[in-house]
Image (cartoon, rainbow, N blue to C red; front, side):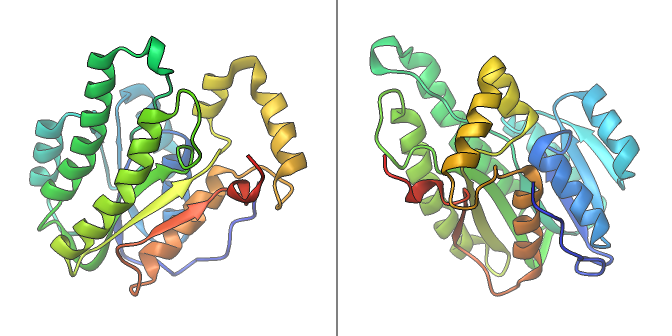
Length: 248
């Protein structure tokens, strides 16, 4: 895991909405926002996990919602009592299935919901994020190399940077950016890999140019930097420890 930079005043008196704040990258981002002097509005799907995380973070407020429910997302932003400085969403995940096993109805639903979620957060946060504030999404790099079972993830991996660039023009002067993460050692990764997680960690430590596994702290540190640097918009920032540099 990487060390956390000293950012004791970078976000002083700023308010950050963290969607997906109850664990993993979202929770670590909330931690680093607080360490940088900011306040947090924590949003998550699971009330119990959100409450446990909130007991540590001490946020301004919490809200329980599924970011895929665009009506609920609209109500959440409409109900915010004040303008905020930044919104980050870690919601959403990949979908892997070979074509032969693919349920087209489920696949279409996943693809549409992922795009609708991103557009919904962008649409309904308008007027709630200050000028030069940040709308920041978390995507991935996993679909950049062709492979069996990666079709849907590859399509989303290609779509999100283009969507980000266009939103940056539509929402200006609010800044819109995307973090494209490779493998990140989160509780979700551990649950998906099960008893294969240790082997995956060992493989990455041995093969990545950085010789360690990317952790939530690394992603959160990048997120805070993007929030603070007001010259950044419309861009995609890879964070994968050099994984894409390795031979296929």
